[in-house]
Image (cartoon, rainbow, N blue to C red; front, top):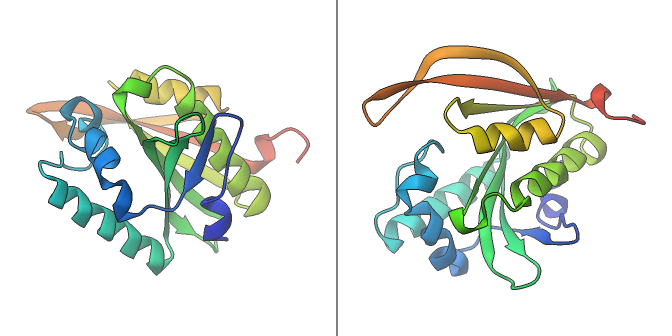
Length: 184
């Protein structure tokens, strides 16, 4: 799996690039938003310094080889609008997990769907993975729709798996397989 290829994925409206500290202000805009971070699995970043440290940690994980991260950039403006992840990469079993987070000003505009489509092509076609999976808090309907639009299927539900802000939520487990792609 080639990280440079992952960082150069693009379509007609967005492109991926390597995470870097210089984008910390734009990343902090959504990493510090409680509504955005609520179901993501990371703590709300209260200061720019916390965001910088988190970016450094993501870059460190990427250098260790089991995580790929990229900033999602809007072609029309050059603005970082989100972060995507391919993680828990198991090269022997040929599977990994996908994740994504977007600035809420860009929700509902198709960018998440496009970003996951780029990850799918990279994972299944370029990297020859067999399975991608994703875990979603059941209350996060937007995230589930992104996966369903990309051909993921609901594999199961883990009841009361997440405890967020004094409330339990179920975890929805989605998956997509390489053999489900047409022409492969």
